[in-house]
Image (cartoon, rainbow, N blue to C red; front, side, top):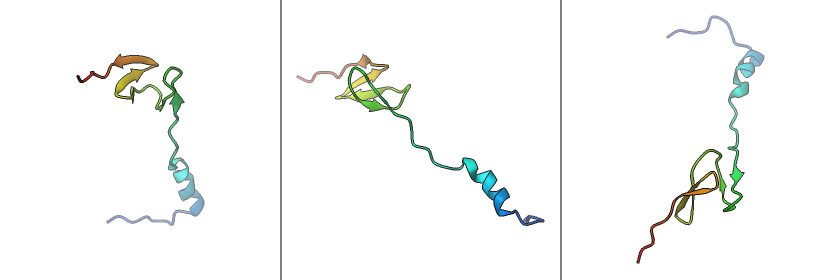
Amino acid sequence: MPHPKRKISKSRRDKRRTHDNAVAPTLTTCKNTGAVHLPHRAYTVDGNVYYNGKLLIEKAAVA
């Protein structure tokens, strides 16, 4: 197993880890339905599928 030849300093280690943080996803609210969803994704409201505020797939009515 290879081992490091020199000790990595704390500042050098922490510089490498600056981008390793978790970020909260950005959410948007639909103007038509008021649903909170991820941007550029289809989302469902009461079984209907919406994208960009427009109805794509309507829930089939069961008789």
